[in-house]
Amino acid sequence: MRRTTLPAVIAIAALLSGCSVAPQSALSAAGAEGDSTSAHGLPPLPPVRHDDTLPTLMRQPDHGSDLRRERVVADNDAYTTYAITYRSEDLRISGLMHVPHGAVELPAVVLAHGYQDPRTYRSGNSMTELQDRLARSGYVVLITDYRNHAASDHDADNDATLRTGYTVDVVNAVVALRRAGFDAVDPARIGLIGRSMGGGIAYNVLVTRPGLVKAAVLLSPMSSSAVDDVEILTRPAATRAQSRAAVEASYGSPDPDAAAWQDLSPRRFFDRITEPVQIHHGTVDLTCPPAWTHASVAALRAAGKDVDMHWYAGQSHRFGDPAWELAMQRTVAFLDTHV
Image (cartoon, rainbow, N blue to C red; front, side, top):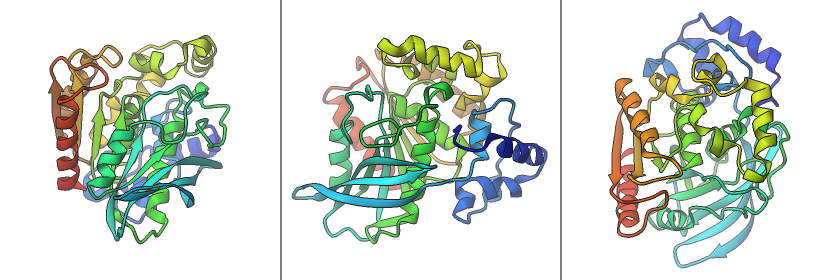
């Protein structure tokens, strides 16, 4: 997010913080595509109390564009897989896209993957079974690698901003896919799936860009409180001290009562969500504790949001069968209904 000119953003924030919904729609992702957020009855934009937080991102114009199918990397009986790149701010981000054979105006899903060490991550090398399942179920599937991963450009500021750049990259993946004009994709029907860290990113996308996607599915998501997520967002352990120091230089020590940490937490802004949400979580997850999702679901429901929650008894962070198969059936059915 530091790639946005922050003085300009803060100036806009000062002008809009007391305004009605109309200026908000002009700066939302939905507004970038010409939709009116007033129909959703969104609350006014929250004030910007600290640089590089979610209220800043709410005001940041979208720069998702120039989605390119660079080359074919695989072809099977059901779909063709392309290496892709797209523009996100001034970065080029890599990923994979699966296109079912003969696809014309199909719904699409953008995937936000969980944490993998960027030094060893390979393009699209996450949620591979899910990618295959969705493509065989009639969806164009785009998995973004995020900045600093695979063939994506590098962003030296990403650690210092608690990796909010990943949220920017997911937003811009959806926007770039919508703007690409591919015959295979219906740009009005795009869903979002996030797993683990990607689930936390999905929360961020939903609160900063209401109306961007039709529905979202979260698999074993991290917390909707930024204080809970610091350990995940400062991996790998070998460089955690350096990453933690960069974060604290930006925002101070993690403190749920501090303005910066509140405004990094999507839970604070759940009243802005307009899409139905489905969540899957194991009851013995040690990576993203079930208590995190209990708190998120309670907050979503308190905000009057549509959340379809599924718990899987005895399952850890990664589900085994038959729980995984059941989760996939429920995911595809949910997307078929809402996307």
